[in-house]
Image (cartoon, rainbow, N blue to C red; front, side, top):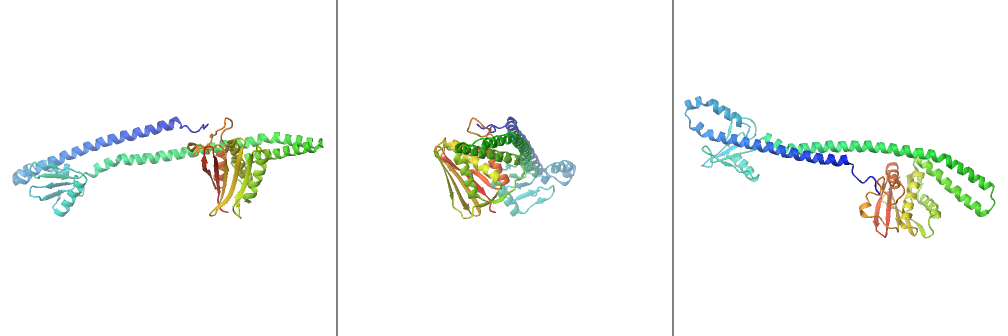
Length: 389
């Protein structure tokens, strides 16, 4: 059961809407660019058509029609053009894409420009008089228009990522406040019955002299002490815990002793300490809660029979803790979601244990917790990594 695995409907609709918007923008911009290119090609064709009579007109005729020629020149003076004549001679016009009435006659440069156009797949059109072939380059306006969808996509992605980050940050902060408030209220509510139970246990101790009964009462007192510790842990959620330098091997052994007395008889616990300095800065109350939660999950996975092995070793300066069980394992598809709030393989519970464990280790202890390995019907290894002191 994972109540948080489904995406919210609005997120899916927003993603679909964004994709459709980008497709529409790309199609519309591409359509505009195509029309612009066709318009520029027509202007170049008209310009080339008029160059022949301009070149062959006498001065008097040219003066009479100068207005028409000037108007045509102004319409094409932003388009880089190269005319290739019958004899192979080249004339250039506005090669740098800047409005100009100056012609370019540098044959080497013009040939290089034509080579670039050939490599880009451009095909010239055939002239009707002045030139045999007419080459022309895209204007900066056309190039910018073609790149516009990319710019819009990058800008939209940036805003979408920023919006998603801000939304997630706000939602996570709100969830943190809810969990912290709920935890503190739980601790407060537990306080009264725990105090009452302690009083009744002390009363039973005074009225009972049977050794076996007193041993049972003492175990009850130990469990109530553990309840007090649990309430104390809940009361500290949301607050910055105090960290102390603790011998992790001793801390784990205490957790094992507590769980071993309450585990089925066919479950065995083993602790292997492979380092001479198993120290780390931890809050023992919160750290113990994480370890006990992992042990309980392992017990559930093994169904009353198996082995839980805890190994301590160093990875460079990092203190490593591996907790391995011989349970039923976790499917590969679930190994990345086990720490999400709501994930649980049990029919009871809210699925918050591993989520809180991750928060305690990573947020409060600046460490890491993850599924190191898991194999169906062979077991699972959870790994905890604590930073150097």
